[in-house]
Each structure stands twice: as C-alpha cells, then as structure tokens.
View 1 (spheres, rainbow, N blue to C red):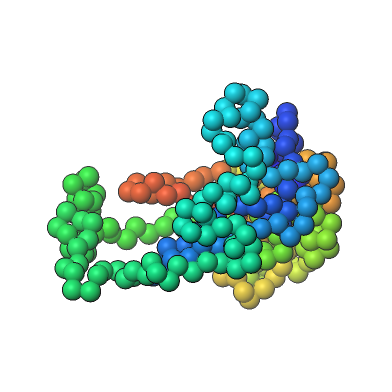
View 2 (view 1 turned 90 degrees about the vertical axis):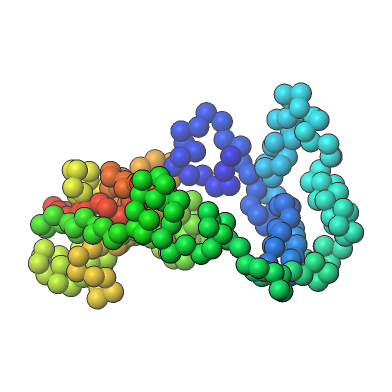
Length: 281
C-alpha cells in the first residue's frame, strides 16, 4: 500500500494505491495533556483516480477472508461517529469544530495537589544511579564512551531531511522536483581544498567498506564541520520507472553498511560510517 510510486513498491507483485490524507478520514487524534482534546482529520476533496483509503482496503480484504465481524460498520464515518457518541459528541459536531477540548477532564500535569510524589523505580524516587541498570550488569551511571573517529582521508557521513521532500517518497513528484531535483554533499572549504574539489563539481562517495555512490554534486560551505559531510536522504533511485529522480544524486542508505547498536536499550546509530571522495572522470 502506498500513496505515490516509490522504488520499494517496484518490488511488490501487487500495489494498492492509497489516497492522500487530504482525501480521506483518519482515526481520531487524541491528545492527553493537562487539558485533553480530540481532533478530526476530514477529507478536503474526493479521492482521485482509483485510489482508496486504507480502511476501505482493510474492510474489503476482511470481507473476502470472512472476517466481517471485525468491521461492524458500513464506512469510516459510521465508525468515527460511534466512537464520538460514547463521549457525548458526534461526527457532525466534529465537522463543525475540528477540535473538541475536554475542559471537564482537566488533570494535573504531574501529581495531584498534596499527593506524595512516587516514581516508577525500585526505590520510588528519582535515581541518578540506576539500580535497575546495575541489576542487569551495566554501570548504574553510564560512562561516556568516545565514538569511533574516521580513518585518515575519510569523513563521517551525516544525513538528514529537506523541507521540500518527505523521505524518498516525493522526489519523483513533478512539482517538488522543480524545487529540489537532486541532493548535494556538503563539505567544508578546508576539506574541499585538501581534496581538490570545486563547488558544484560532481564526485563519487566511497565508504570504509568499499560501497560506492552515484555521482553527487559538491556543495562547499562553512555550514559543515571539517570532519564530516552531509547529504539529504531520499535520492539516487535506481529504478528507471522513477523517471524524474532516476540516478539523480546519491543514495545515503547504500553507504550505511555499518550499524551501531546500543547495548542497554537497543537503539541503533547509523552515523558511524565514513566516506572519502573520488573525482568523476
């Protein structure tokens, strides 16, 4: 299921085209906070072409699998109205208000007035030294571990997003492609001079394991440190059906061949990869 063509959908045998958030109802957005509220996302116009909302796909697939009992409503409006009726509201009211603030359900942000504060720790107190970590064999106060430094002639690969695009999903969009057709690799002027790279010149990035990128335009700027390079995620597609973005810029994920895993909480770090430059002949 996807809203727009993407490289990953090219691997699927069947693609179900979903309509965009502007063309469908979504489930209620419930915000707890000190003053709880409920927000409605309603369609601005009808879905185009043969696209459908995901709820419709799930209900139709459920029907064909004999799972109608799990979808005891005719459409999503009926489902939303049923939820809202339980709190004394309705879909009709939410269409007019958009956001329903539940003033009668205010509650303290942290603790009730006069209540003894307790915390979800073995001691019931704030623990600067964690007895839970210690019980699992870790340092009760985590010690700083210096991160790996790049080898000689290599630079840490940093990636991120641009306000123009949503990950790699929108790079083939004709209107958005006009504003940003390809990504660039940012490098510090000192690094550019050291490697003989001019602003606007195309280079190839090669990581510490020999993974190579497509050619990417260099952006020489003081806005990046001398020990790393930066590029926007979502470019460098290799599927020819992505006509506007085919081989435009470089794919950062292809250069991420090493992933660090935090031994305590399992989080992953992918900025432990390093790249060097090759000139495009």
